[in-house]
Image (cartoon, rainbow, N blue to C red):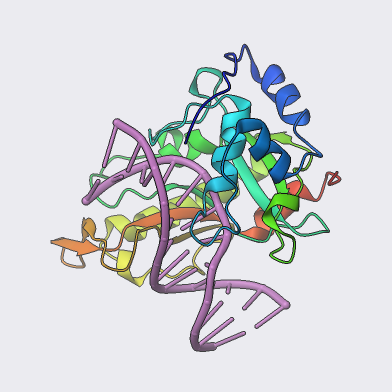
Amino acid sequence: MCNLISVPPLRDENQLLLRAQALSGFTLGELAMKAQWHMPANLKRAKGWVGVLLEFHLGAKAGSKPEQDFADIGIELKTIPVNAQGRALETTFVCVAPLTGNSGVIWESCHLRNKLSRVLWIPVEGERQIPLAERRVGTPLLWSPNAEEEKQLRDDWEELMDLIVLGNVESIRAHHGEILQLRPKAANGQSLTEAVGKQGQRIMTLPRGFYLKKNFTNKLLSRYFFI
DNA sequence: TCCTGATCATTG
DNA sequence: CAATGATCAGGA
């Protein structure tokens, strides 16, 4: 994507929050024009477009590094499509699930916990009846899990990781977990990655990712008003 | 209507 | 291929 606007580096999370607040109320069409980006008609062939557009406006480094979007200030950015009531329309992808090399991996130092330790949520209107260019950005929310939320995340993560380590990855369905779920995260059904089989042998399986279920993200968002 | 499994684009 | 950004869409 062309990059004609330079956004200065961020000092701290308050500055990031202010910058995000300044985007609320704008439509995606306005933000695309400001960035001089091409507007796709819909997201069918551009599923991550909204997230990358907001990253650009907030000064996140684009790329595919497995770290927080704003690693220097310890913040992960998540755009979340919402309906007119401010309720999540989709689950939220968190990170790829490690399917091998998990001996000794513990919650305290896992990738998922790090990613979710501090999240800037930006709701964006996502109903398909609204043309993409007319969808508005909502009020951002800076969030860290409280004790109860962290326990829920940890319980689900540990249950899912146990299944992965013990060779049961292929028996995990999306309904496992109260607030976290493990689902395919792949380019297509032919993608394969290494994992552990039932007899401890090496198998090839579809890459998986951790996702936050909508019931959980809705609890976070419901405490705030949308626009 | 909603959820689960499938899929799309891009970068390193 | 694996990571990033996610949403699509058929079947329950």
